[in-house]
Length: 412
Image 1 (cartoon, helix red, strand yellow):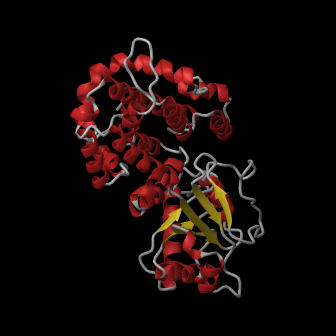
Image 2 (image 1 turned 180 degrees about the vertical axis):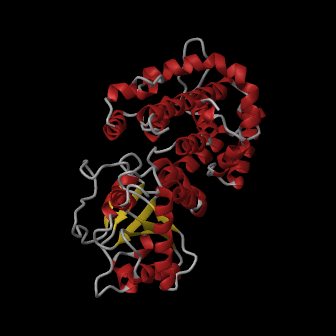
Image 3 (image 1 turned 90 degrees about the vertical axis):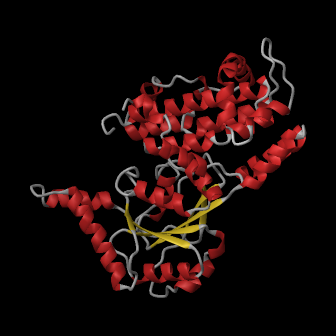
């Protein structure tokens, strides 16, 4: 399959597509009824309510484990930051976290990773620990061990389970153990076999503590895209509620083509809502195109596209540093103008360009939007906005794919 075809949804991807449409059937029916009654204001109000609810979703992830297990580095890695970058969680060989400390995602501040104090001290008790760290505010827990899982991990996991929340065992610093094995036994080194031994050893420790059938995810905070991170990400996707899943996905670091594809599908599911809102909100005439559109809303969401795919200047500079390449070399593959400043003039220019294309694709819009398209797609305004947003999302996601391949071309 050609690289440019990676972003064409398959039937399986369309199923994922549906999972990320965070709106109830009841809301869709209310919007549909309002449109059929000619009550655009009522439909817009309902859609804006849904979009705002998505913006307001908070996801709080608790990260804990013994001192020195790599908790803080894990917090930084999930947020796409290095340990020495501004806003990163402090790290060290001794425990640096004395109380639950929140670290919001730099691009999606509604997603917060909490670095919790270390466990495993002689006085540790799971029930009092959870009370001290305010158990109720977290959506799920990541329990990290850098060597083996001990009674303290199991006690905490059991208490978390008893109180009705999810936990996930993560074995960190996998890369260090692999490198040590390579040096000790260079002639017989087998990475896959060693990873299997590590996983079995972790599960053996858990079974010894009567924690049967628990999954363990092997990770490296320095090479987060390797080992079991994809399995962890997929597990969380399946087990999180749909609205929390949406927030989690958009905040993930862009470390695989699969994650980029899922982000595209999630953002694409919001386009019909934005098209109705922008078409019926503020009248802004554009020469040669009969379109009504709220440019402010479009600027906001086009910026969201750019940031979610890591095409802003800060994210590109960070990626170039990780890939050990000049940032200009990575930027060479970017085609979309959205990677630069997103201004009112640019949005108006894109709308004008989209006007002609909208007429050609109107039948497609009618067949794909979740509201019966005969009402919502009846005018050029809706079609133009829809076409523009979809085209821009296609361009940005394709650029993100190209940037990823350029950055990691030796590994892809």
